[in-house]
Length: 193
Image (cartoon, rainbow, N blue to C red):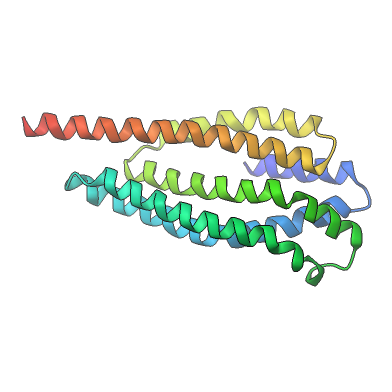
């Protein structure tokens, strides 16, 4: 992932030697870092709550509540993200940077929501003690991203590619978490017999 970030930053610099793209990218990523605070809190909590609720056969209810809170926070933060355009001028007075950053707000709002979902569902999978499959999925999802970033012609293309890949990764993680829930229920029923 760190190599991907380095590669992406190099591509952004190559796309625009004036630094406008990079300045917009940095502003967006700083706002994304702020949006991650609450998601990481829920994700870390998920990895502790799921094992304790599994003992009482309440893991599915706990998982649903964690995802509900993620959705509430995600919707609120998406609304706030859409309104960042009113504050970008506090970070730069470059009109091009403001325009590019504003143009990116829709796709990066979607990205921050999907990234939050990813953080929480990954915490849930860690709660089920599932580490190998999510790690392999993440690794294999990053490989095509190098290619997609390489062929990108604009900063917006890069954000569309990484958001699309994150969406696909979330679908895989969600399906796998459902499988883990079902497998956990089957184990409990066998233990009861």
